[in-house]
Structure formats: structure tokens, C-alpha cells
Image (cartoon, rainbow, N blue to C red; front, top):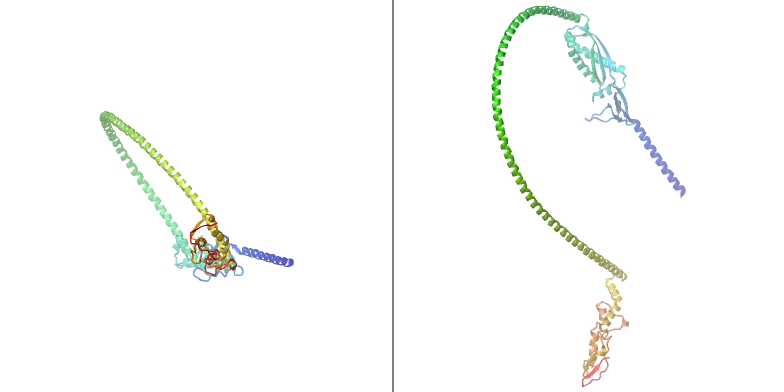
Length: 488
């Protein structure tokens, strides 16, 4: 037995260790397959990667930043570098719209795109290629698109409107680079030249035109300077004379204005003095009027305050008395309620205790009756008989108690001595027989209970219910005269 218990314990321990090893191994494998994508790379998961939102089966899943669990056996992963690279494009003998061949040396900065949808193109077309192969592929696309743009523009547009030229190049080149998952970051055109010297001629023409325009501008400026100097001198003399005449007129007008100002000042001072005097008197009268009004308002307010104080004293006293009466009434009502509640709780507890006592008595009686019925063979009638038989002594005692206290020696019976009954019994005998018949016989009690009296207690064969209790004398001597008998 101990060997079997030890074997079972060893088997359970082995299973637990194996389960733990499996869990640890699974966690380790999942941890090694949970790959994080750096910010400067694109992680490409290929294999069984499911379908996109439109339900199309995907060839690869691209993730830029974050992490992803690579399912063993079903998926594999690789990285695409997002580091930009520069491509030198020395385009020569490109035919322009004017059929003039030009050289356009330029440099393009290109990198793998992180835009959704274009990353998948990079995963499909660039995964597994080194940077040199990617540069060669991009260089071929740039050469073709650069030639196409130059063929649609004139040399003057290319040479003068560089922004338009660069915009056209960026638009065409980037559209084609997106097809393989690349994006154009920057375009820089260093210089433009042609074999025929057309661009140089345009430059010399522009330079000569600029020099002539500059000389003409200098001569015009010199002429304008001389004329301007003479006009300035003339204007100076005129302006000086006008200024002097205006100065004299201004001085005279100023003196007139000063005199008028003095007169106006004195007039206004007089008016101001008059208004000030009137205003002072008016203000003094108003001050007195306002003082009287203020005193009146103060007296009125004082009277109102006295009246409010007296009213408040009466009202507050009345309210305090009212609240006192209400509080006393509430306290008395609360005391009465608590007393009534206490009496009710006591009555309820007493009645509940009596009810529990009655319940226990009835429960015990019911339990005892159930035991009696079970002892009687589950017959209720037999159980009742058993209960009556158990109480037979009490029943007989009650019968005896009925005539126990009768003093026979104190009973006097007047008898004529003759046969007063049908069986020749005397009146005394009939009196005793009737006395005994007033007590229920034992045989009748058993019959009322549905029982038969045992034979050893006597049988009533004559039909007289009291035959087993009273026997009449066999013979009775008749007497013709009344006889006084005393029963002892």
C-alpha cells in the first residue's frame, strides 16, 4: 500500500514538473518571437498574415514602430531600413522642347516610405535588396522621369523658373518611386549647361542688357539731379519769401488774438464770479433744505425703529411662549407614546411567551398522541381505547366521588311497609336503586367509548344497566301502616 501511494505521488510530481516545463518553454518561445520594430526601420512579417479590410489576401504585413508576435512555423520577419540615401544623377544630352540638348547635373535624396499602402509596395519589391541595388533601381526611374520633364519644357523656363522645373520633376519622380515603395525627400539641381552655348548666350544677353539698363539709369539719374537742384533753389527762394510774409501776418494776427483773448478772459472771469456767487448761495440753501429733510427722515426712522422694537418684543415673547407650550405638549405626547409603547411591548412579550408555552404543550401532546397511535398499530380508534383504558381509574374515582359525601345515616325514608314497586321492592329499596342509577354505570361508559367491559368485571345479561351495582332484596315484607326507616 505504501509503495502504491509513493508511486502515485511520484507520478503526480512528474506530471506537475512536465506541465511547468511546458508552460515555461511556451512562454520562452513566445517571448523570443515577440518582435519590436525600431523607429528607423519597417518590420515586414510575411507568411500566413491573413487578409486586409477589403478581404484581399495579404502577401506581407508592414509595421512601423510598436511590436508584433511572429507566430512560429507560420510567419517570418525581416526589416527595411528607413535611412535616406542620396543619388547623384548627371543627366547629359537631354533633349529639351526646343530640340536643344542640355546637361542637368542634380542630386536626389530618397528613402523608403512609411505611408500605408506604399510600405507594402516596398515590402514586395525591395525586401532582400541591398542599398546599392535600391539606389540603382531608383536612379533608373529618376533618369527616365527627368528626361521626360525636360522634354516638355523650354530652356528659358528651365533656366529662369527653377521652382516650376523642380516641382514638375518632384511630381513625376515621386509618382513613379511610390510604385516601388520609395518617397522623394529632396531635389537639388546644381547647374544647367548645353553644348551649343545657348544658355551662355542667354546669359551674356542678359548681362549686356543689364549693363545698358544700368548706364541709362545712371544718366537719367544725373539729369534728374541737375534739374532737381535748380528747382530746389527756386523753390527755396519762394518758400523763404512766403514764410517771411506769413510770419509778419502771423505776428499781427497773434497780437489781435491776444487782445481778444484778454477781453474774453476778463468777461468770463466776471461771469464766473457771478455764477460762483449765485451757486454758493443756491448750494447753501439746498444744504439747509437737505439738512432739514435728513433730520425729518432721521426722526421718522427713529419712530419706525421704536415701533418695530416694541412690536418685536411683543411678537418674540408671544412666539417664545407658543414654542414653549408646543415643546411641552410634544414632550408630554412623546412620554405618553413611549409609555404606551412600553406597555404594548410588555403585553406583546407576555402573550408571545404564553403562545410559545401553549405551542410547546400542544406540540408535546401531538407528539405523544402520535406515539400512542403508532403503538396502537396506526389505528386512531384503538389509540382512543388505550387512552380511555389508561384513564379508567380516574373515571371510577369520579363515579365514587359523586356519592362519596352522601351521609347515609342522616337519610330518613318514610315507608308504609307495603310493596311499593313492581317487583315487590319497598320504597326504601327503590330510593337506593334510583340513587345508584343517577351515577353512570361502568358498562355504559365503556359502550359510549366503543369498548366492551372485560368479563371478569361482570356482565349485564338482564338488560338492567345497574344490575352489577345494586341487587334488590328477594323478599320484602309488606306493611299496611307507614314505617319510618333510617338508613345507616
